[in-house]
Length: 170
Image (cartoon, rainbow, N blue to C red; front, side, top):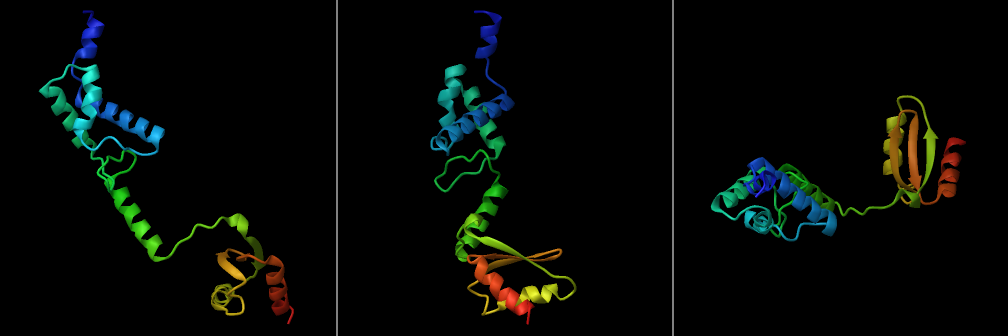
């Protein structure tokens, strides 16, 4: 056996195992969109045994690598490679709040915008009044308070423009 072949057959370091495990999981996620095969260190052993001689030390090295990676698991028990435990907890909290708030993702191209230029210290009060107005409730989808005025999003730009101009020109 050549020296090069001998080097390939030697058990990998824990760091090398970690790199290989990350590559395996990233490939899985890129090909399938999610990990559906790897729940524990033993699930990686087939791959490692195809490259290195099967031994207790190889198994322990792979187990140490998996443990050292601190990978969270999804609700089905599969490893998640591209997120930390903190990110998983934050995602759960965000999902919970989105559910509580009845969130619906709506594309902006469905809305038209108007910019209501306004100066002075009353701009914040005007923002509040427009936000709470029954007259504008079905006309203004949302308002953004900006540095020089208010940005209004609507489904009917023409009607909102007429209503606002009628109030400005009173």
